Length: 258
Image (tube, rainbow, N blue to C red; front, top):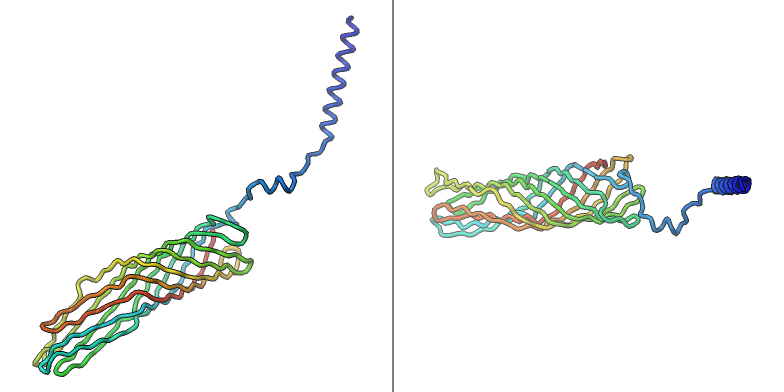
């Protein structure tokens, strides 16, 4: 009986050793293509980075309309003048990583701040017995926020964006008019020189890669914004300034991705 138990024990140990040896000789099978398709892709920070850009811009708005209602000894006269407003400025923009990615196409989000200084406008109008001078200047600050649709290629990255814009217009308007009889001046300066005006924007951009992290950026953009008006009253005469902020912008700068 004792020999039978011992023999049975040795047989079990032999079977276990053979099974372990068979498992050790089995190689791991690679994951099939169908199984890989089920797994979500791994996107690294280098493949989906943040982007910050800065550079120079030129902005032109539809312009300034000046309406004059001037009373002189010879009667009352009316005059309308129109002039463009444009000037140089700067911008900085932050673009998020892709929120949705489908191959070379992606959806991101961008936040931009820009500033442009409009040229000082100095005009002179002559009426019978009077001369009127106007001076006008404008600094336009804009904060923009909206989504961007992006199409990426190895050499160039194209995108278009649209969204909301808040415009902060800091302006100054001065009117001077000769008195009757000539010899003195009636000066008037605007007091309400800050306006906060909502708007919309639409742009298109191209980014040209120059290294792994740096790119050149070119943007064309159009803004729609509310207009504003101020009026100067001098005795029985008046001058009103109407400013329309709709207009084009051209931007150029550098992008750094991180």
